[in-house]
Length: 113
Length: 113
Image (cartoon, rainbow over all chains, first blue to last red; front, side, top):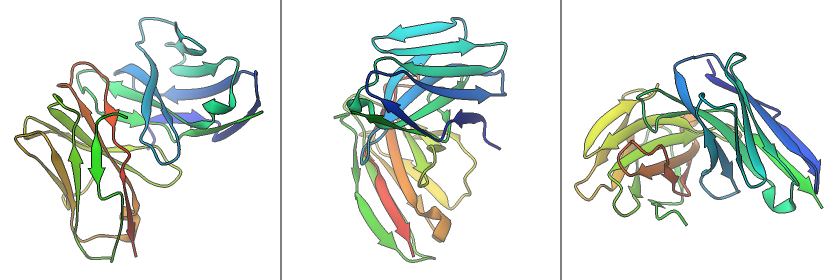
């Protein structure tokens, strides 16, 4: 059973557009939600993360929106650039289970010039 | 460049064989986690080592085993290889397990034929 469900599987966005990737979870014991970016041939790299005590976190062009009651969170990439083309994974960590993450299945983002 | 190095980068094994994958963690990091990433999927947590002791295990059979050495480098061993073990194996290191930031290596691609 997938602990974190991610959609869409793939996404095509024009340069300058907004990319939105969604994730949902069931286990209310999750208390840390990172997003990872993975380029071909590389390992995932931490992009941005949020805890459930805030509803939004913004770092540059990347924003996480968090809806605790709906058990959903999303990544928004503003002004998407071709260099953002990569696979994005949401993840979740159980409280006190540090650095043992449950990952979503990934979204392959293609930003067209 | 995360400072986490893995070897070998690619290898092909026959079903039933055994394989050892190696990971050198980032300098100063004493916690190593291993993940399995099947093609087109998100990483799945295998196990974590903290100061040479196993510190948590995911839903993987006992034929997946590991070691962490005094210099905090680590090995992942898989016995009795099955075709479904074909995947990218990722090692991630962290400074203890309190900071929630893990740094992934580029992985070892294992193909079982």
